[in-house]
Length: 439
Image (cartoon, rainbow, N blue to C red):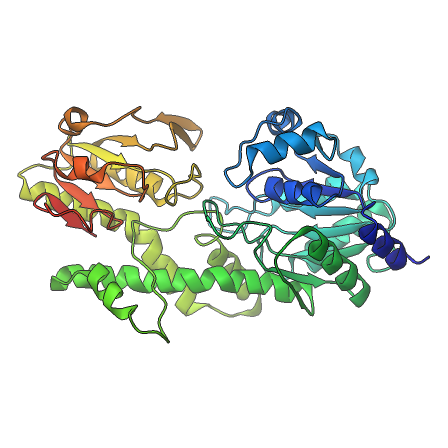
């Protein structure tokens, strides 16, 4: 049998061995889904702590069901390791590692590169390799393919198959998880496309949409998040204008979204957070410069969104001024450091940038987040309050709401007698707005 026929047979009879490189917010849910659908799966990670937790059946990702992980580990369907020599035991491996920005706001693909180099040493003939990490168009073919070929001595398309399938993880989403979110797949060659797509159809409940190349799939992912970045930039700019005009931007958006076509609601906030939306446009702008092209609209939205933490603190300062207080020396409580509501993920959280801006003014800042007891930024740990009540709130000069967690008592916050700057419109239905100002 050919490599293609062999792989198809393994997929159909569920003897295909799966691998996932990177056991974070993307990788662990994917590994669990593979194992749940009857494929023995090995998770690879450089962090021994994550590997130990998986092998002990201890879950650390919100989108994974604790009981599922425990059962899969106990049954031997899922295990984790730091030993990349076990790559030779898998027929399919997905790379799900971080792709952050460096200090100069340029793509940091060091995790992708190091993962590819580790995999290449042990890559066996007949293996499928799929990159899921969000990146600039061309990464799979220009970076990954040469590393895998050089390190393994195998030929892409002949000895192994290579593709790109962007992750679509939305932490905290109660409807769409890894298993039921449609998947996009681009691969090098028709045979690779066929078998890689077949794998995802076998392990996911959502549709699989194929495109003509990895570059198309890479650009598709960038488009998804750049679309959101630009539209959020638009409403953030309008929020600034509406404030000058004495108009409530939130009421404007509520009115606009009554139109049943041609409008999708996006909302302002203290900035952008998460592992994709704040980063992806930078990847595209960086790659575009290789072609002498400047993404002017994208860069404009990035400038607006990046400035929102500073604008948030400026507005907070004006609120304090009206109460005859200066930011310098004032006590400020920031409510929420997660990048979105009801999750424990603070990657690229705008709230953390807001806290940094407050510190620059000389304000004394504390935070409370029911999901995050402490966070790490620039090598330093910051611990939050363990609880809030009226007495604690009264000890502050200003409360700034930066994350719309649903398990916070905003009535108590609003009625504590302290000025409140609500950046997420969570106090919309509170009647007593005497002390509340909304972004």
